[in-house]
Length: 228
Image 1 (spheres, rainbow, N blue to C red):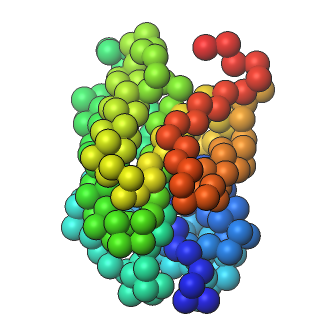
Image 2 (image 1 turned 180 degrees about the vertical axis):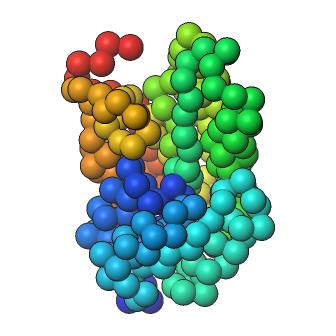
Image 3 (image 1 turned 30 degrees about the vertical axis):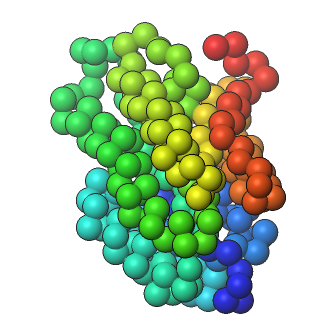
């Protein structure tokens, strides 16, 4: 068990994060689960095997101290850190007269600063294990969408991933996951013909399970029927 690799996931309570945790646990990873929702995290922790295989750490990713405590709890529980998945994020209605300025602020802090904080908190430990850092961007991080501040945050994540890859200079692997439309709690009206969270989780595991000399830098994943 001490040699089993360790994966830390932010935004782990639902959707892509929870699906990735399940797939990783099946593949033999021990998992540190982070999100704001304590009840959902603890339920998932129990599903994945309890304290020996998973820990639940309620975390606000916009608080760097909380992210440091998350990493410390992970290393205390499992003794190492091999993969960090900066997955926490949420969206907003399109339109620069939609939502509220407070909602915008929280989204920008979570999607952009939260991902940067995950990098900063985990990077020293990932360097020790020649580990892997994965970030969730979006198809919206490749092209601007009309009236979408969310799209701007995901452009930032895509750029952050490439900036980290260049800085790391091979010391760790870096992957940017760019989903198209996914049927997750992200949407209040559930989309049709969308990807499922499991589809993205399988892609994440594919990138994680490549040989050490293979770095899958970007994965753009759309539903077959999504045109843009």
